[in-house]
Amino acid sequence: MTIRAGLLLRVALGAALAVFIGAGAGAQTAVPGQDEMNIGDQPGYQPSPAEEQLTGAYAKQEVFFRTTQSPGTIIIDTQDRFLYLIQGNNRALRYGIGVGRVGFTWSGLERISRKQEWPDWRPPPEMIERQPYLPRFMAGGPGNPLGARAMYLGSTVYRIHGTNQPETIGHAISSGCFRLVNADVIDLYNRVPVGTKVIIKQAVAL
Amino acid sequence: MAGTKRGRLKVILRRGGALALTFIISAFMAGCAPTTPPTPAVVAPAVSADQLVGKWGFAAYHRDEDRDRTIKEAKAQCNRPYVIAKGPNGGLMMNLADQRELSELVLKGGPSGETYLGPPGAGGTADDRIVSNVDANSFTTVWVDPDNASRYGTSVYVRCGAKRSA
Image (cartoon, rainbow over all chains, first blue to last red; front, side):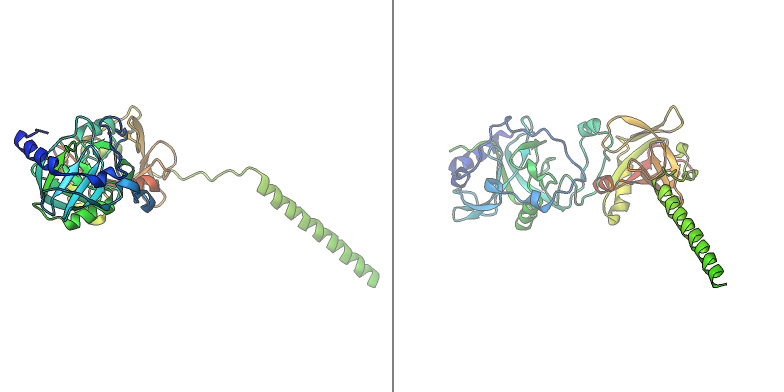
């Protein structure tokens, strides 16, 4: 992913104004590279409702969040594995997320360019190399690795999407996309329109 | 007279009892004895291995309403085809579920006319797929094993390159 210096500056300025008090309350600060999850996608796997129920810091919750960004903006904190949906009045909805592995993290400013219910999945070539028995295309539906919803980020290949592997939330696992459990991604999907501003940053600059 | 009748009756009862006992023992012995399973009838598959050899666009779906567009997507996947070659024993070199290495699989007919694709042996085992909708340029498979069927759904294969006439 190309890092755009101008956008980075804007993101850094925005981040400098943001104080993550909510994140400090019980949040697990991840050290990049130390909590990578070495598991592959599990196409077709359908987690139980109990597995999909997040607890603790990664459960969806409203938190105190001071920022100059407008309500409706999404801020993704890849270091702490949180996605914030700004509510106004110093409040935000916070969702636990899975992020890209080292080498697949990126930052920038994008907008949601497209929304898709039950997105289709095309395993990347390196995955087909490792697991040649996989179909090259899997139509969306329960058990699909992209989960229940996807929100595409600008013209990039990256998305905010669901997952059929809830245990990966809070970890570095993906190739640069941001994953939420299906209940959370459906909730977020219903709250944000196409055109929503999405700020992706790797570290909080206080 | 009466004594003679009573004597005959005793004989009949004795013989009947012995017969009943023999029957019970025989039934018990039959239950204990190793039973020979009936030999499954070998049914010739309706599909030949040659029909499935080639390069295929390979896609899958879980909901029937996705079938048509999945077939279109399978065609679009010919840039990374699934290759099925003929095996040394006349079978088909393919992957079993979750197996990276190829195995030589064979086509097997089922008693109700279905066609199985799997390791040599009886048809309908967990490692088998049911093959259906076979024509010159496409076919469909579903795993017999419910877990595999749930995870991988219905697979469609569409021939890449020059199409064959039916």
